Image (cartoon, rainbow, N blue to C red):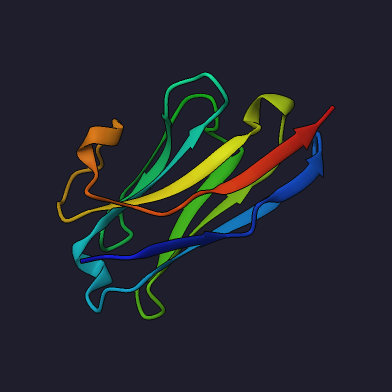
Length: 124
């Protein structure tokens, strides 16, 4: 069973940058598609970005495309989300998720394992 732990959240001004990391406990990270989701108060959990097990495929929501970059290092069992040009509407708890599959699901139900989340707050 995969255990996921996020880190790197914080408070930043609009236009700033943050880098989130997700550490996975499994020994075969390349078998898992990884995703980042976010959830703002009173809203549903929303897909942000996903990456295939090999790292060769990525997918982004329209709201973050061109500003966020997802990457992974399978040797270190980590997935990162580089967030640039942050906006107040990016404020949310960000979650890392994993699924043992080839495709990149864009709904929360498509993932089997979740981290505890890390808060990202962007001030205007």
